[in-house]
Length: 281
Image (cartoon, rainbow, N blue to C red; front, side, top):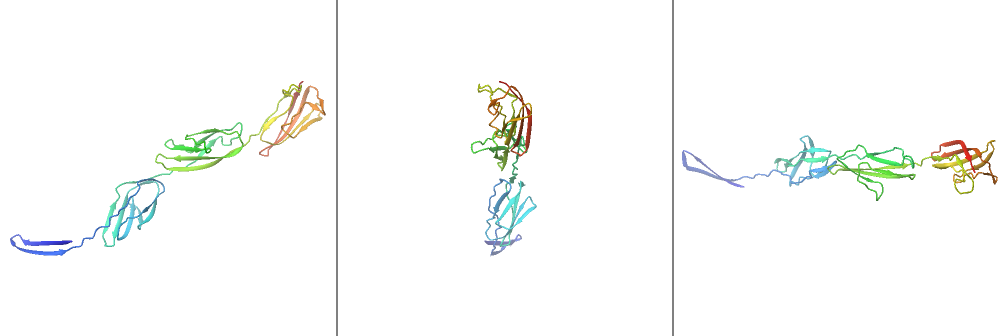
């Protein structure tokens, strides 16, 4: 840029000195970039000042978190940050630029959930309720029990009456839109149950004609029937086949008979039941 200077003495204004000279004024290196102000952690972004002929750039967050270099990726944990850039051009000029907006990095939730009862089974403990852990009522919870069962509830409840393993997925979203996902496997165990009637009436009317215990969760099964003198008169290893009140094809007399049931459940636990059944015609 060309400058003209005129100098005169106030006491002799008619005498003036004029001089023309050229002065080169270098521009300070001002950055030209944008930062998304509100993101979830970890907030990772590429910082490039886009300064032409830059010597070096420092990015300073909250006055004390300093990153050296330009065109670098910076990851910020949760928090609120002010940003300044300290840049020096190749012409030696230095500039401190204060980014006008506060950068908010919101925390990411940690997804977790529990269920009750903790050891569900197919019969007596088959109603299962799921609970976020911990529960935050400012968050939203989306569950996936199957492709079509995806409720948006705090504490959903489901009933399981089949032995199996079921994947359960929960997505938690904060009020700022930050998300986390977790999947757990819910195992439903078959419950060992054994119902033993105390009487039966083998009279041919098709009602209660067979002494046949019923149960679930049974791997092996043995039923033995003894008469009053201790003689074994019936045996079965099939829970679907009971005693019809006969011995060698002959109807047994009315009376009280002893049964012994020896079973092994699906957990390989041996169970033995001894009792009495009354035969009434």
